[in-house]
Every structure is written in structure tokens, then in C-alpha cells.
Amino acid sequence: MKSYQEISLDGLWHNNPALVQLLGLCPLLAVTGSVVNALGLGIASILVLVGSNLSVSLIRNYVPEQVRLPAFVMIIASFVTCTELLMQAFTYELYQILGIFIPLIVTNCVILGRADAFASKNPVLPSVVDGLMMGLGFTVVLVLLGAMRELIGQGTLFENMQLLFGPMAENWKIVVFDDYSFLFAILPPGAFVGMGLLIAVKNIVDKQLKDRAEKHKDDQPKEKVDRRVRVTG
Image (cartoon, rainbow, N blue to C red; front, side, top):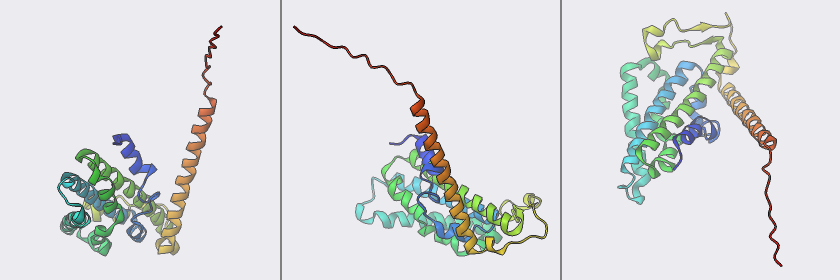
């Protein structure tokens, strides 16, 4: 079984669901026009991921192989429904903006994939950590892409954050460029370009880290090997 550090690094970087596995791209590209939309969907995804991984891990030894996937889908759908009702109760305007992409979390390959690939084979605590870290990795990409598109497209950051955090967030808006708009960044093509840039940055960082590790390995002094020759006469 993987260590908690390996599970965390996989979710946040090495096996990030958005940047490496390229899963859940439909909602990721569709709702990241602003930070608040991206963060709202990200939090909802984390709740569903953690809850579904926890439940799947608890029942993994009691579900027959023939009904395994339908059972997982039912569990995920239950948590999505709970999340949807919570958003309707506390963040109704944001729920209306996100629209169909909240119910569509049920079909998100990230969530079903983690339930099948990890939670169904591991104990409860590692499964919860895996769900949390995969959700955080997905959310970080959502927020970064949302921030890029909001900044380049509207010249602002953290606009309408009160939709998620209430009246205390009304003054969180940061105006970087006055009277500015770039429609391309807000439209779907801007989402594809922004996502491509994020993947490119990750690949560059990975290559630099690999080159640095190889250089460090080459710089290490080689151990002297004491070879003894036995002579028999």
C-alpha cells in the first residue's frame, strides 16, 4: 500500500486528475470563467470524492463483483444529491450559475475512477486521503484556470465571491485592469488554451526536476569497491 505522502503527491502533482489523467475536462473547461465558479465546483467535487471513497472502502468486501459498478454509481449519486441540496440551501445563486454541471458530477470520471481504482482496494483512511488529495488537485487546477480566464478576460480577480462565502466576501473583488475585457479568454476556446498552458507548465517543471535529479545523481561520488582476490595454490 502507498504511503500517505505518495498518495498526496499523486493527487496534487504526479497523477493530478486534470493535468495528468485529463479526466473531468468537460466541467473543468465549462465553468472556469471565474474563480468563484471554479471554487464552487471544486468544493462540491471534493465533498463527493471524499464521501464516495469513504463509503466504497467501507463496503468493498461485501459487494459482489457483478454489481460493483452500479453500487458505486448509486453511492456517488447519493453524495451528489446531498451536495446539490446543500448548494440550493446555502449558495442558491451559485448553484443556478453552475447549473447542470453539479448533477453531472455523478458521471465525472475522476470520482468513479478513484472509487474503482483505489477505494475498492484499500482501507478507509487511505481512501479518504486519496479522495481528498485528488479533489484538492482537481480544485487547484480549476481555480488556477478560473483565475487566468477571469484576469485576462475581465481584468478582475475574486469577483462575486459573496455567492460562495456570503456578505463578508463582497469586498474581495480585485480590479487589476479598469474598463478592460478580452472576450476570447472567457469563451470556450480560451479555456482550451489556458488548460494547454497549465499542462505545458507542469511538463516543463517535471523535466527540470528530472534533469536536476539526474545531475545530482551524477555528482554523487562513486563508492569504491574493495575487490579481494583469493589465490589458491
